Image (cartoon, rainbow, N blue to C red; front, side, top):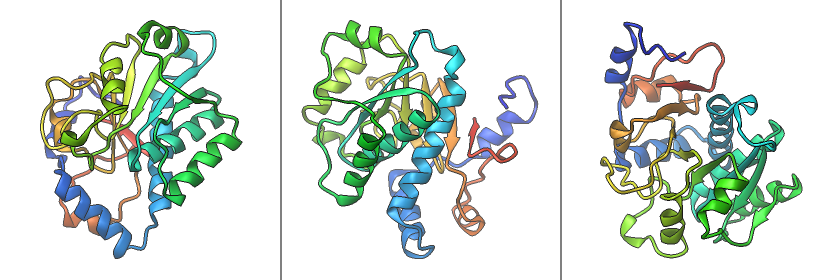
Length: 246
């Protein structure tokens, strides 16, 4: 899947379109209004695709700890809900997720995803240890679904600024959903967190051009007319996979 030595790969990556925050908003609005996708449906598709990508980046057999523990940190908006769905699917895939969701969204849609996780017996942390070693010792990796492309970074306050400070110090791998938290989705970041894996949803965001880790594109459902209209030049997904490594 990863043709690092092949001829074709650079061409694919070059032609793939990296979207700005505004372009992404337009695309999602069109999916909701013109194509009649539902918000819940999109979050479910994205969360499932993220979970599948995580299982490929970090197979159960590769985890260093005895228990396949994963810490999923969820923000207050849509990215947080994607994290909840991702955690639920990881539980079904026999990982042991724990969720930290410090500010639960009042939206009924997000509450539904929370209840689904609770019914799957996924534990929720009441606080995030500031002692980084406790996180390193307890979990194999952290899934960052805190701040999405929609977040205004000028407005990031506690508890999220503290969480980001903690994540900058953890030694276990971080996998970020759509954009690494603390990065401006439109530009390269120099001082945000440093994830090992980035899972872009539908199309990569502009900030991903500077990402040097393992990069997946997940969420294979965009209607062909839209792909063409926005000149996304998506790569060819292998077989029936819902993600591809870029």
